[in-house]
Length: 99
Image (cartoon, rainbow, N blue to C red; front, side):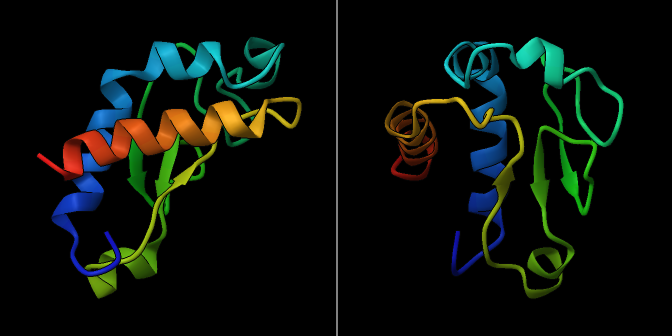
């Protein structure tokens, strides 16, 4: 992802395929925070987009311009277990990037 854009889109697509599993592990009360209002995507709908603060996963505009970079998963709650969330994201993204 740090050197080309297609892996960024592949990572977003992979996260979308496992959205329910991720949300289940992203912290207690996520449905109360991710309502679809106030620059959040609804907890039960997955979306991604460039410079879209209302998406589940945001691709910064500069990443699209540079055609390389990173993504931001905007769903995890502050009360999430960082080890579980990091494992989920890493396993999901790396499984598609290694293919």
